[in-house]
Image 1 (cartoon, rainbow, N blue to C red):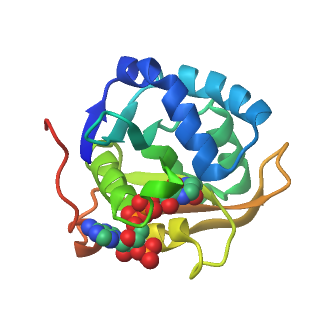
Image 2 (tube, rainbow, N blue to C red):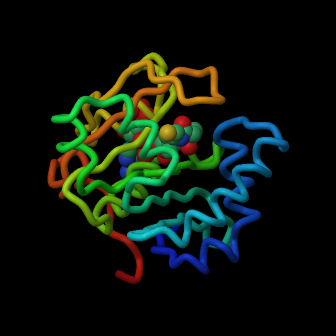
Length: 192
Ligand SMILES: CC(C)(COP(=O)(O)OP(=O)(O)OC[C@H]1O[C@@H](n2cnc3c(N)ncnc32)[C@H](O)[C@@H]1OP(=O)(O)O)[C@@H](O)C(=O)NCCC(=O)NCCS
């Protein structure tokens, strides 16, 4: 498996595979995936966009992750902003990179692919903080939660409900750059 940095057009060229990996990883139904496909296509043009992908030796997409600079006027940013008090806004939302998606095909999970993707993405990210949202879950039993905690993400908001989604989410954050040992044991990105 090989980790690569993607430019916006690289992601757009593999958009079918990206949506496929996303659907497999999250277990989402087709209808919802088509809506997400539209969003993802638009996200690549946002300021500070960074993306990574993991390819198998025969070029199949095993996983991907991307994010961009979080700013007013973005739906996610505005939702989180409205739930934070002023000091928290100033700290978390002034100069922040949002990890928007991070997924690994179920068959490839559990081998450090997600950790390598996250480490590479955060190494390329601009900002003094990074935020992400993840569904509330048992922290010990959820691979995503274990990954984020290992990277030093702390609670920013818990049990947050985004409009239009009945599931509760946690908003997690940490400062950049990432230097902790936990994030350092994964090999670097190809071509960088
Ligand atoms: C969350 C997700 C991205 C993590 O990716 P992953 O490749 O499965 O996760 P990791 O890189 O942490 O690897 C998993 C395990 O391998 C271990 N590991 C790490 N590096 C390793 C290596 N080099 N070799 C072998 N194992 C390794 C880790 O300790 C980890 O163990 P743990 O999960 O028992 O704590 C992935 O599981 C996924 O797509 N899940 C579904 C979608 C999702 O929840 N996405 C995030 C939504 S916000």
